[in-house]
Length: 476
Image 1 (cartoon, one colour):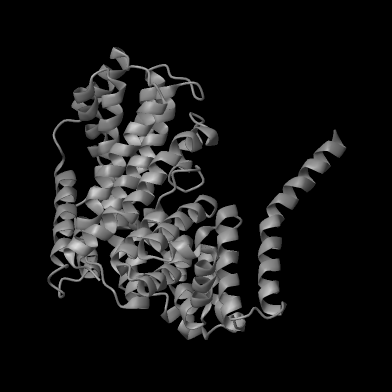
Image 2 (cartoon, helix red, strand yellow):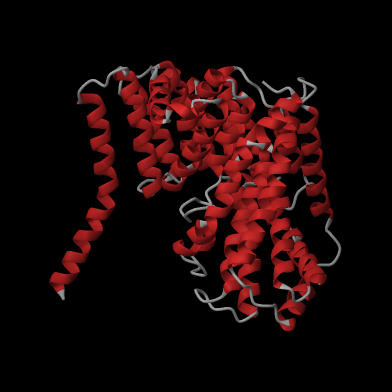
């Protein structure tokens, strides 16, 4: 028994050490390895630092924020740039813009609004599980337009899980359980497509393309391009889930219990009403910023944050709000922005572009062919690298350069980078579906079995509808 325990402890130690060993090998290979044609020392070091961060993020060997901070100090240590340049390129209006959606997430989570939404959906659907699934997914998607995908998913997981338990559904064998637990994160993906604030990767992609190529996608332009795709992806995801999985009907008792809980909430409290007013005003401000440069998106976010902290204007006090905001994600986005800047400056981005083009068959060297290749590459990369900001950093410069070289709308490529960095239908490794995967209602095989359908549709829409809308609107 003692030998078995020692062997188990040793294996556990090796598993914990493995990410650090891989990270050390990657960095050492870049700093001391042979020269790479077309890539100088600074470029090799920058690419290695990004890959090391991806390894540490995926393995969760270190806290998210610690890995992000290490990225910033690693660049000057490896001779890429000075400390001042590393930190200067990590900050921008994007960081302050993100404070708004994160604050909305925390504020809404503390209200009775999610419970009210669930009750309204079930009152409409009755015992039809297909109607219930569509209604619940539509509610998640709507909420995901004003809060992060992870948060919107998290708000409804407890509602979905309780509904399944009351309905007597067993994890692993229930078709309704499979459809519902996959439908919640997929619906949050759809909502995140619709508006710029729906996902942090959207904001990051816009910021990267503005800095790298001087192309600005406004809040209103994003909505015009993203809303049709969001609606289409919501319907496709629901249709795929209910076609592949024959869902069991809902029991009357489970239905009545959740509806009664929603009715028992009573009228909205003054603080809840104020929270909704602040969020609504911020959304209007972000739309107005598309035409009035003075109304900056970061300005709107900061004012909204200030309004939420006023006495009586929010269900949370300011200290609680700050303590629950996702500072790790903000630090990660800051570090990715800095690394992405030096991927361009060192020539590593162009080296990667040349490599991508070399892999695409000559017959596909057209605008449509390269857009198709970019979308498929993004889909596959995110499947194995479930860290959205890292995927955005890897894709931004290469795909933006391809857009310029082959006459593709750069605005369309912004959307492709953002969507492929924030959405992963094939495997539950991304931070959104992993929230529901842990409950055991579906397997990886279940997700692949149905996930290929929305994956193919998203790529198809990116190649057809998206460039057509950009051309119609005259977007560069």
